[in-house]
Image (cartoon, rainbow over all chains, first blue to last red):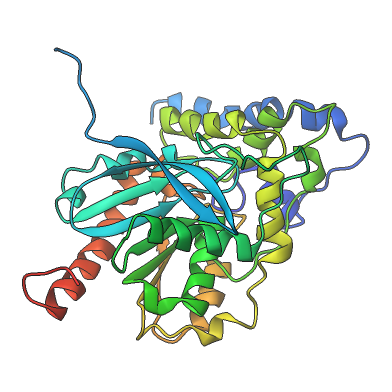
Amino acid sequence: MPRPGWHDLLALTKREEAALEGDLHPFMTHLQYFKDVLALPRLQRSAVPT
Amino acid sequence: MTGHIEPIVGRYIHVEIDGEMHRIYFEENGAGIPLVCLHTAGSDGRQWRHLLADEEFTKTFRIIAFDMPWHGKSNPPLSWTGEEYRLTTARYTQTVRAFCKALMLEKPVVMGCSIGGRIVLNLAIDHAAEFRALIGLEAADFQAPWYDTSWLHRPDVHGGEVCAALVSGLIAPQSPERSRRETLWAYMQSGPGVFKGDLYFYRVDGDLRGRVENIDTAACPLYLLTGEYDFSCTPEDTMRTAAAIPGASFTIMEHLGHFPMSENPEQFRRYIAPVLSRILKQSTSTKQGEYV
């Protein structure tokens, strides 16, 4: 599980570890989709037997 | 009758705010020390439904959650003619005090989250004597903005979806999916421009830097609790605020974000139970046999 502050795209932009550039309209109108795609590896990792 | 009916009761009360009557929806359960709960920006009192239904807390607390005007089932005032909604510090303070007065609550505890946490600090600064204790969740004197609020209300972007998507990252990744969805659902249902209007208070009008030092926790105890995954009001923001207030209690809540009471009610309960217990003890020791 990501550490606090490293768990969300906008958390990364707030701490200036990432930047949003260009035409943001398509990104903002599909914001939850982009976030969910980036969070998919968490589900896969939790599904792998340890 | 076979259906399960929850003990929470919802009613409307007419409250005068700034010279105009407002029809305010509130829910309550329990008996004892009045505990008024304030929802976050762009949401409503449903966020508190788990606390309201808590069998143990409601034995000693009368827990009340109301929808701010423009939110949930509390409509805009009748004088509204379509102008942009903007919440101010003065208006928010008036609303909370007027609601408590209308219900004739005797020295209530007020617990607010996010903008509710911020206004709790303002109540502590200016009206501490009216309250038994104040609890700020995800509360700070100020926090840095992290997105452009003009995205929240414009004709070419679905307001409900973008509001929910923006705040979704403030929920801790450990929170149950069902609770995450429920928390975001309220944001999807908020009226157009209401979240943005609440953030006017949060980002512009409600800057309390340089004022929280005046809080007297001897007059009214102050408890501040912030989730470790809240990157809007970070634990560092709350820690800085608490450090400026002698006697303020500060707790970092693990595995929680910006919406502790709704995103993970079981985890939140672990942190709020000791606070309510302290308030209860403080009240009973003040006068034996009565909650004063």
